[in-house]
Image (cartoon, rainbow, N blue to C red; front, side, top):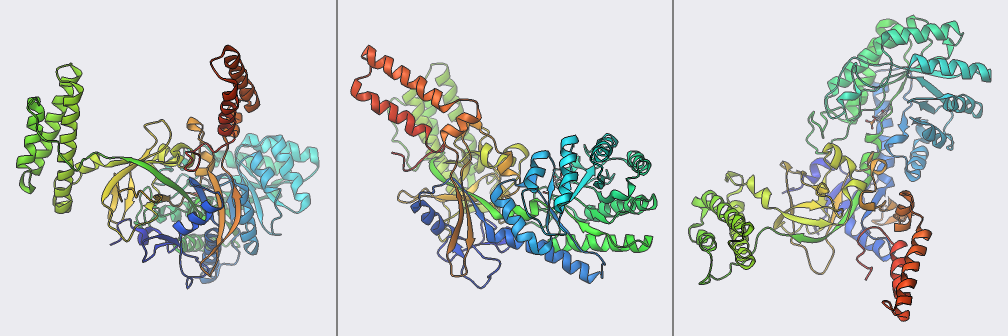
Length: 625
Ligand code: PLP
């Protein structure tokens, strides 16, 4: 039984071995044995790289780039489309050098380019040698400096397209190109009226923040014509929003984009590139339906729908087929990173044994104990109600000073033992039980070594779901259910929605924590947006990051290792100078030594403790003792 739905959401990249371990499958070598993650972690641990860590699998990234380009190539061949696909990767989706460098490398055979939404992103894009026909598409708000760099970069052979977002921006571009005496390569961003469903619907339709409506577009076209720059307008851009759930919305939006393309061409714009933005989704849950965390289409279908829609529209208008551009970010990088962390301890909400009754027990304690006498499959709901009622009454009496702490502790313990028995009965009844939903309320809390805010910000901010599974012990039935709590001191720092084989659940089946070995969880498909959006809540910094490549012989190559932030680094990020802090601490130690409250011989101990911390990892360190 696939409790965690691994086979459903894993897209063949992840599997469970007969030994019960989560393993990575090399898409380039499907015949090779999957490589178990616990083994990889053990190996990394021996090299001094501990969890929490972000594991990037280069082989997955390469496979996604190939898949998207191959799917467009297939659709183009099938429709006898007369122009190529030239995708660009939006840097904002994952700006890490290790990721961008690899996308550029793996994208070379496909003339893959980059999308820059800001000056820093353009600067990053221009530090890469792209293939001759690859594009750099500049979106976002642009000042004269941005525009100047974009125009000048063409002298180095870059195909840098400035996508005009507004009539005002057109004026900036006209001014700068006049000043440089050089033609820009231009695009216009069209605001489509078509709206999408899902989390990002605000990025589409009339009220979306970017792009121009028909009136603004015509004003820009007229201005460019007046300035003798209309011949520079080569690309039309539109973006529907990320993670489009329903492929019908893609078709409708593309059809609308084509209408603009045909109309702008009729206005005299020599458009040659149709850029359809991002939006290609990831099926996080594996449900294959149009919902917030799933999509009702495959990459192949997405590509085919686009190519087919554009072919018909252009043929009908009698126009040449434009070069197709998309700015797929999420779909390219999400699957290639996973976050791995360890469960440190658990808080359980049941107890295996019941204390013996005592003479002096308060009657509510005795009432609680008596529930055990009539607890059985027939009366389980009644017992649940009674146990909660007596426990709450007891707590109220404690608050009013009527019962003492020992009495309340006995009551709590009896309550927990009742919960343990109730859990057993409900588990045996399965979904038939009216209480199966309620049981999530008494799920264990597994305290884990990670920061939700740093590593999974979308889980916190927008209820994003990622597949989460224990990495080991799949050969044993899970005996507990848990929610996962992070290491920040924030009650929001928890995960309580999980993708399972039979749907979404508020708790995750887990194993009792083994005493002799670590118990790891993996959070999958976290390569898009999470790294950049993460923040320093409680000053938990970047985790260790490791990039690996899977080898067909069952091993892996460590391509790159980036140590997580030290405490000194996160201090600097919030404007504390670590040296000043050491000096301030030393001054206090010296004063205490002079005053005699710290012995001279203890001075070094104190200073070493402070310095060791400042140079260390921000997360819980198993080996730090
Ligand atoms: N292009 C633009 C202009 C965007 O704003 C975005 C993100 O929303 C993307 C591309 C990437 O979208 P996705 O990650 O859905 O492919």
